[in-house]
Image 1 (cartoon, rainbow, N blue to C red):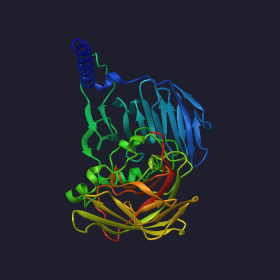
Image 2 (image 1 turned 60 degrees about the vertical axis):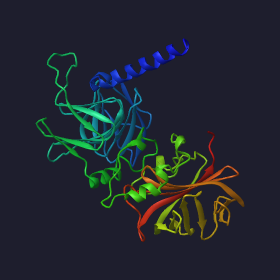
Image 3 (image 1 turned 90 degrees about the horizontal axis):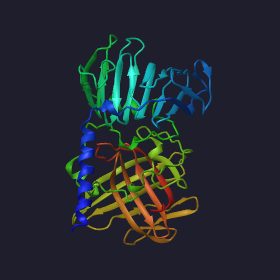
Image 4 (image 1 turned 180 degrees about the vertical axis):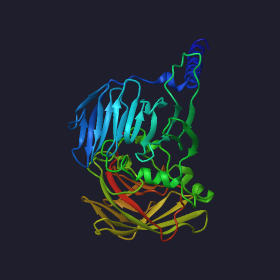
Length: 402
């Protein structure tokens, strides 16, 4: 008994310490930034440091301006925070904040931002800052985590210190041209959709840290309780614990709501085929607490046209295909087995189906270590209905090391 008490004490002390940190002002956690390195350039070569055209790996120091023309850029600060800079945008690398001068940026990590005299303080989150050239008003939008917004720079040790306005994920605040903060508002679904389809998120190959945790657009229809319950209690991706793995950067499909950095956890040897699904039916009751889903997938090249049907409920999930699919020499074919699918002629050992983050996902794990995933993107909070057409993909690759 005496050996277990110190361990329990350490656990309690650790919990108390973590709780204390969470209650401290956000501002005390800001870290100085000394430089920013350009890690990716898109669209053109119009990226400048102090008005000098630069390339990838160029470094900007404190006090220097980074500016884009008809280009977009991704930068990494020396504290590992990441910033993406939109077209016709500029900011100053500051020791205490990212000072946006023009345009639009998204920041992920521990880098506080400034628009005019307004400061957005973060412990490490994802937020967007944008300046409207016509009105000279700014907008700060939080996509993940929490930030605290102040009308001016403050010292937390100052007796006159005033707490800022707390913005949680899904909130935004307007900054008027005179530096006065507006009211906190919810980000509307159409705003969020346009943002995620826009210049800060489309086409970048280098991942934005914590992107998988951001809020997602809500659908007008919304999930029904039955839809959630039928989706295997929300546990649909047996590879979810490998979420740090990314699809190869060479794959850049034109998908409206999903950043391709997060298509799959299968790994760098995966093959990705993009296309669209037409929903035939979803959640049709076939008796004995069993449900059937069906959709027809056509790839972008028009070479694949196959209907995939699942049966799920109070028994192991089965998947059936209207015809075999061959991907880089691997054949996925229908068969009257327990799981209803063969990979290279061998019955699959596991099939799961349901919701995974923003997508609906079917995962078939073969006995030979091959994993076949079917993903329907941008389902969001929308229950699929017959006739709906949604972007999707087939993903095939070896089972990663666990």
